Amino acid sequence: MKKSLRGSKFDDFLEEEGLRAETEATAIKRVIAYRIELEMKKAKLSKSDMALKMRTSRSALDRLLDPANASITLQTLERAALALGKHLKIELA
Image 1 (tube, rainbow, N blue to C red):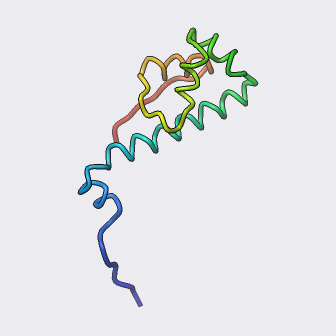
Image 2 (tube, helix red, strand yellow):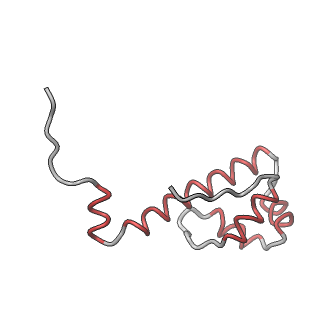
């Protein structure tokens, strides 16, 4: 026996409240920060070493790794990827 669904989807709610873009940006940023930290651990890079490889400051790297800070540039992401020996790939789905 199938249960009938009541109410709307959470995405619909976020859309109605005008929060969907902000919520998705925060979620994506959390994933990016997590993946960069994992790659840094794998490469045994400290934050100071990573900042040097990116040619940026330690505070800029801290902002990149802050899951709550969704304001990052493509240039910063590209520098992080290159510092880790990776390629940045962005796609629209």
